[in-house]
Length: 336
Image (tube, rainbow, N blue to C red; front, side):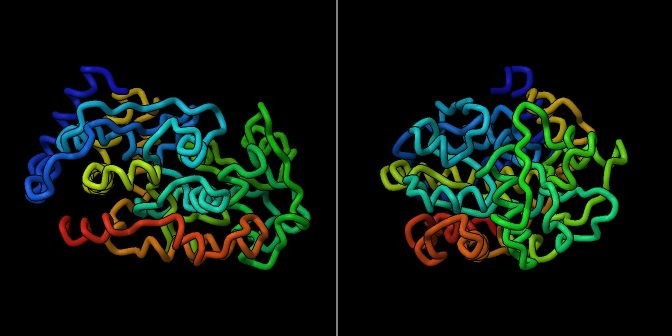
């Protein structure tokens, strides 16, 4: 959690970006108080800058009436569905493919909203012209089932490559995929901020997919917010307030990326301001009102199902693992 000095800097930051609009909502009085003032969010060992809004949401949660909110450090390699399944967290952001996989394995969770578009980039060595050339190549991932593995499987399947049989997966273990790539031990790997920013600075490899700008990836959410089914059903008012705070944090990242980047650095969530700023400027945090969150779940659910990565149909995943009522209300309430 940010220290007192970071909190003061956060307040100073939002004072210059229309704090009244961010921190006050007319609907609060009509909703009544939240059923609980406690909420737990994840803190990942290796968090990407793309989930920045999860770390600049503190004062927005306080404005929603939460007095006890904690960030629970999840074990290395754990994701939002893991944290929910183990009863460690109530809400968390994660990649759409990860949320779909969690629903498929019956984690008691509900995807509540899409948050931002884009964040991953596919880096390859010279000689690989595009995704279609990945067949038979060595592709680095952290481990089977991790976000990079799921995303890369979908990317490969989208051009007709069977990710289970035609790609030579190389798990990195203690060595990062980036190091294996530099050493020539793999041909491609997927990077999440700040790794792509490091590539550009160090002039490593070439990018063949940038999900923030390349179709079809740029047409769907990358990160989505999910909550524990127990929390969502027991505390609907509190749930709506959490979703509202997260979406307002997305607005903050979109409207004032420089201030949000400074908050991330001051809060100790990332060391490099330049990489944080570049990430926030490049990623579309302002699409949550426009894009259809259900379309994203359907898209990744179908692709993962076709690739044999999940057993459930997209229809089943949507029916059992999503709840859009809060998002629908907030789209009407928080008009641009």
